[in-house]
Structure formats: C-alpha cells, structure tokens
Length: 209
Image (cartoon, rainbow, N blue to C red; front, side, top):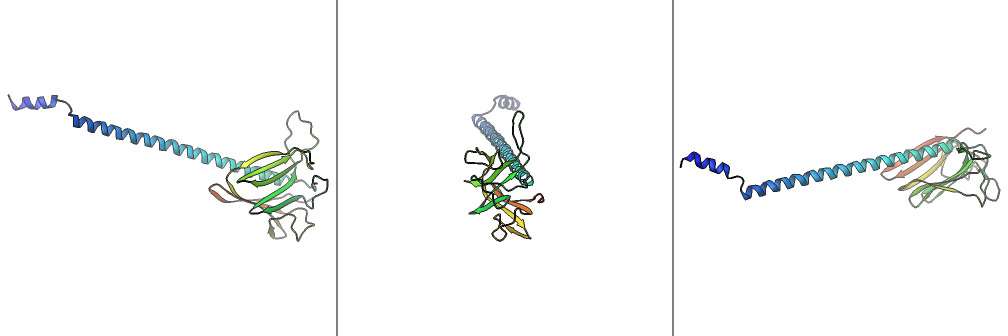
C-alpha cells in the first residue's frame, strides 16, 4: 500500500485515550476558573452592596442627629420629678462615650393624630457597640412616659459629643465652670463606625432668644 494510504488511516483513527483525558482536564480547569471568577464577582457585588448600605445608614444617622440639634427648643426641660434642668442640654461622658439629652421641635405629626405640641425629648447614648436614639412624644416625660428606642448604627466603637462655649470645648454640659450657661454655641459629634474612624460633624446651634 502507498504511503498516502497510511496517512489517511492515521487521520481517520480519531483521538487517543491520552488526548481525550488531556481535553477533559483542560475543560475541567476552564470550568473551575469560570466558577471561581463567577463566585468572586458575586462576592464583590455583595461586599459593594453592603458597603453602600452601611454608608447610607451612616448618612441617615448623621442627618437625624443634625436635625435634632438644629431644632433645639428655647426652653429648659424638666426631669421626671418636675424639676427643671440646669440647661437646655444635659450631657455627660461615660467612659469613652457620651450620653446627651434635650428637647427639640419639628416632630412630625401623622395624619389623624391629636397632639398638643410638636416638641420631643430625645436622648442619644452608646449601648453595646451601637448608637441608640430614645425619643418621647412629650417635652417633659414622667415615670409613665413611653420611650421609643431606635437603633441608629451598629459597630460603633466611639461616640463622643463635645460642646463649644467661650472658645473652648467640653464633653459635659453644662460645664462645671459655667453652671449658669443654658446652651453652647455649637456641637461636635465624633464617631468611629466600622471601617470609618474619626467621623466628625460640627453643628451650629440656634441662637438663644
């Protein structure tokens, strides 16, 4: 038989077992790489969405805090026994965190509600790694007043509120050296939240009337 005949026979023989195994291995490797890239892409998408959600929660919390302070009312709140506070804001630093309480106006009144005032008592404090906002639908709560608890932010490692008065900052209000001072000129809120340290917001308070 001629040499051309043997060449045709070799071409018609097809793939050998070794060649098939190599092809299957290559396909399996490509499939694994494709699956890894898909999973990585999905994980990145989830991380980006979670990051975006956390940023939105942070922005909303800062907006609420700013709104509350900017609507500070020109009145001295009273405690549960009916005695007036020494100032419009009561604040102290407990450990590395602040607790602040005051009355603000502008509370939203829902349709159908019959309320005498739009004033609201609010209190911000740190609890087990979270920033919490408590609110009462009255300016001067009593022992029977129901407080609403709102979780503002998780994973908060620092929450500090400082008050600017007479060219100095203090973490207590009213300051011991100025007991008669009813209201500071401004407020500074500093927080460490998750991967974002030293978040700082300055708030100019309304002028005393």
